[in-house]
Amino acid sequence: MEWEKEAEEYLKKIPFFIRGRVKKEVENYLSSKGIERVTLPELLSAKEVLLKKMSQAEKGYEVTGCFGLDSCPNAITSSEKLLKHLEEILEAEKLEEFLKEKVKGPLKAHHKFKVALSECPNACSQIHIADFALHGVIQPEINPKACSFCGSCSQVCEEEAITFTEHGPFIEMEKCVGCGTCIKFCPESALYEGFRGYKIYLGGKLGRHPRLATFLCYAKEEEVIPLFKKVLTFYKRHNQKGERLGAIIQRIGWDKVKYLLLK
Image 1 (spheres, rainbow, N blue to C red):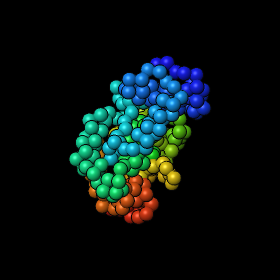
Image 2 (image 1 turned 30 degrees about the vertical axis):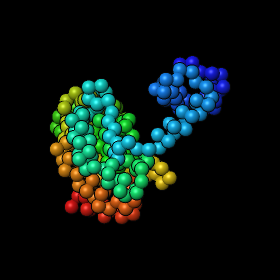
Image 3 (image 1 turned 180 degrees about the horizontal axis):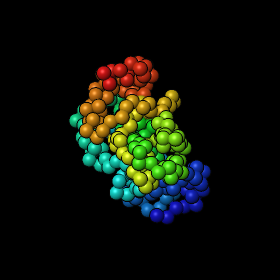
Image 4 (image 1 turned 120 degrees about the horizontal axis):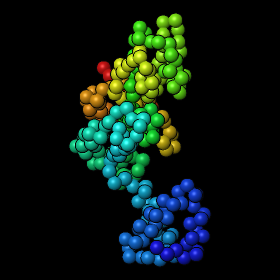
């Protein structure tokens, strides 16, 4: 698509880190209208339409994953089917209709109930700003009798969570992020997989009052769905004006929320 000089000069005023995306969105929009030349008036018109579109929510929810077990060497879990199941539950819960009733008008992007999953501790899918987040982890266990004191596990641990005593390796679980690298590099199988599943986080959001998601519990794959349904029931029961789960948690208090969900 051809850009006129005035339109190109205006585009340069847009921050470089979103400039490419804006250009592509404008071209796609104008092309759908049969326009093949970007003038400044056309650019400004497209920008106004696209900004309005970006602020609106097409659905009452959003589900985000990451590359997964087949594409990422760091992946611990493989959750494509689980994510699909979660999305089906959200659809069945009719969140769009529910939120429109609470908001008393059209939905904005910040109203959406957001689910995010990361197959490893790197959290590329920004799980810490989602309403319901799944974080793939492995919890290592120790067989001290098998340890040869080679130190491999300690050397590969980026968190410096493993030290040695006279009895063998010791793992500070407060530091461990559950990546499982120490297990891969142990030549004697003194470290082995004790648990593989997910850390569940709740209540993350951005906006005017940002909040990082709070760790709720560990869950195996078969435990995720019942817990997710329970969270959705809680969210709908306590939602007042289409607020995010994090706002509900801040209003009610984390200790009470945790008790209600895990009792």
